Image (cartoon, rainbow, N blue to C red; front, side):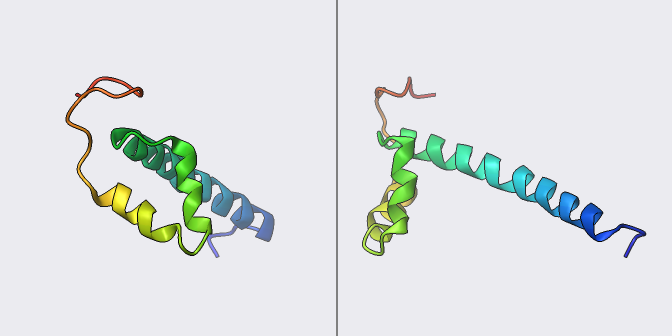
Length: 73
């Protein structure tokens, strides 16, 4: 496939994974900061019950006032 060895394909997959996952983590932390939650709360979906509050926080509107994570833009 495209003249790549198995190691080359693995390296390409790892680079694409990092290019997608790292910005996703940053965006999720920023979204949680918008609703006055720490970025560590993105780990709560690892519990079955934690999925519900996580989706609530991600879907609700951000704070209209400044919070401890910065000013409202």
